[in-house]
Image 1 (cartoon, rainbow, N blue to C red):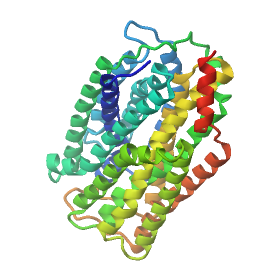
Image 2: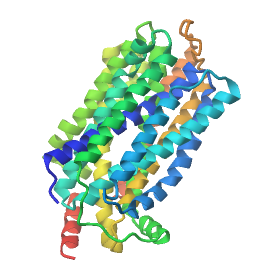
Image 3: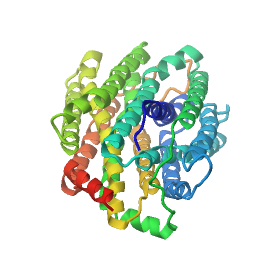
Image 4: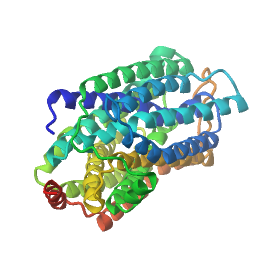
Length: 456
């Protein structure tokens, strides 16, 4: 099936909306509940990890529900629309916490956050499952994956770049009010984007099959060794990214410092977001002219490791207060992450064909449910580590919005710098090692698989 410009645009718009929501939650929930509302960082991290893992365990079952869905509107769009509306409501509730304290606030946070994760799964799995379902052409699939991941990067970058400025604009000195209004704005944009996606993206496909039973589908999934390699790589790469994202706001507030820290943080994130989009839209297509996808993946990981190394050196050598210097390695890391997100989606799509060749079944919903599963698991683990790390280094938050920014000890600031750089390096190095030893779906192998499936 050949996809036209209207369908690709609709798919891309959907990615912008849904990743704005995810970026707001993954990047600012810890900060909102720990630094703004005053809950313990370890407690917030624990709840986030438990909720993400609980939700992630439900993802494969969501994939099965999608695979068994047959309506006049298709398999994917009913879930995409209903999940979007519910998730938008819960997102607003997540950042509009009542003025409670202690146990009451803890309970509210735990319940609402679990509901947010479950409702996000309802729309995220069917969204990405549409890629291998609507076309078997490798070039079309690669094109659609690039569109989706690029636009997702745009949505994430928009939230990263403008959230703290909008929080200050909408809330003044009250970050609580600012986050509430930003969440409302993002929720509205999210619903509008997914409605457009549902209206103009035609999911009709010639690849539909009768759904298997639960045991058969899980058996097919875990026999797919290449899908498991890809999802393990996604865990490691995303953990590295989330650790950096979670720590960086504290770095700018308490280490970089100053009254204009929000502006500096926004400028750094703007550079990073722009480079992430450039990595998807410019650098990846450019490198693909000369390199295979697996080679681009290796180059991206190596460059990201180098970027983290330079960032650590700048922090240790006394350049932590120079925004211009920090932006250089930051730009490299974000650009590489943009390419890595495109590539892991392509590799996961390829594993669907690989699995079909092995088992005779196309399990795109279940395979792509693993992407949501591992991204959430990675996010949960990284935010839990962030919470523990913040308490271990003794970072004192600023729950009192009227007071000055709390001063931190030199030991606390050193610990903050090490955790936002060294931990990601270890995780990315592990991803590079795993991929090099276990991944076999090269471009040539994927072309061979596509040819074999075409003649079946």
